[in-house]
Image (cartoon, rainbow, N blue to C red; front, side):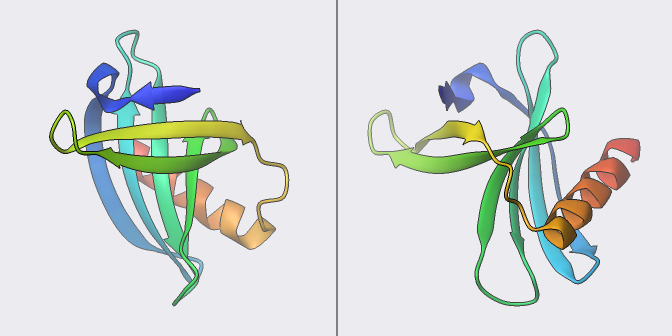
Length: 102
């Protein structure tokens, strides 16, 4: 389902290294307070992998930059992923857990 950032409020932006993985995250909340994370991660170097994390579940995500309206981002959240590498999954969940406690 496409999710427009106009309908989501950015709550925080964080980054760090967890279990050898660089993890960058932006947390968003909808009008009802439900949160999700747009996560970019990479193990030291390329490749960079992007996910949408909601309630501990991993989803594929694509970011679209639209020219009109100017500089509008849209996230297209795909199916839940069952094949996320275990070490990457653990690193991302550690990052989110730490950031949500700050």
